[in-house]
Length: 452
Image (cartoon, rainbow, N blue to C red; front, side):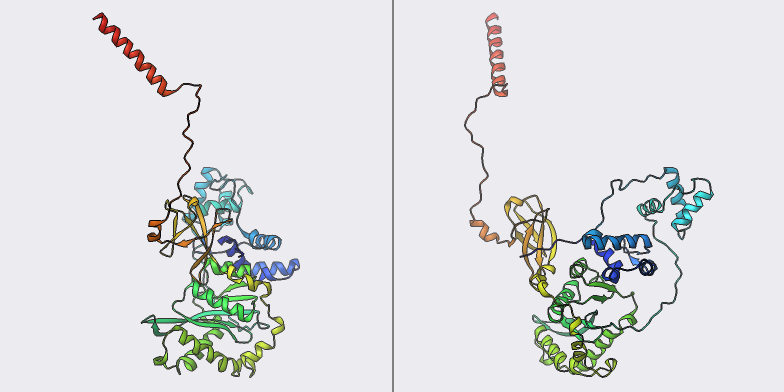
């Protein structure tokens, strides 16, 4: 089985900043500059601090060319040899920090100009990157007090099916699940151009795993989209989901927080589900989650997908989708690797008894790994560890559920004991020296007694 390597979280963040620019064909310099200016004008959530940040055009441009040269791996950060140290004079460091604290709205350029005007430093000596690293190390790099401006909104539609999918979660009813009533959530993915539901399912939660499960089924049924538009929820920003999309060349687009207008099509889909599906559903007939989903999928095929849609000039979602079959990216050879692309990776240290823990369960790994850090490769939808990797990401065995009772009768592997046969010694020996000293002491004691 093929095992994919984990992707650095910062590389995923940088790819999300590039967005659709990463998928664009080679651009002329003027066109690229326009894209960079637009990206630099946006706010982004720093993956390490969670705070909104702005990025310079040069920074985004550097990431763009790195991605074109070396794909997602080229976006992973490299450690600086001088990390944690600043070449700025300590007195200037203190002055910069004080100036920023006095007025948190001061930009990097404003801070540098202030020190230059005060005569503390010659013009051009301080670089923006050095000042930025200094402020970031002291938690002062974020901006404050930025004025709010009205957000421009425009109706949009993808050019063809498969160009853009929208995803969202709707709160559903309570149904019996394993003997008790539980609230369920409808996780859906919609093709923007055709309004076709690429896959939708009721789940017992709205977490990252449920969303990944729906995405996996949508890919198997409808091929690969070019872009995936989601909201800012933590489940949609999970490292695993970003890694999956990066490997499949699906560019993630995030809606602005608290702006439901940006995903109006899927909101209308939710309204249709409430009115035409849940409104007609007899909950007394529902025996479990599988029963509810069977009815949902039947309603999708027999009603929603074959009903004319006003926003499609009277076409049905299925008919509109079929018009663009030539534009759909098929999975092709990736179909055999799809399970591996959805694997999760967990780093664990092997205990002295040869076990590791995952999701509250103890697993046994090869005993020779005791004391080492290993990577557990999990199929999250089967809740099964499919491989164990070492620190160099090489397979080193399997993980099996701990059976403590079986271990009671299991024959232990004995350690190799060195051969106890005597060997000739030519140098000093502590035992022989002790014996010689005792003999000397005995002779001295005997002589002393005779003289007495």
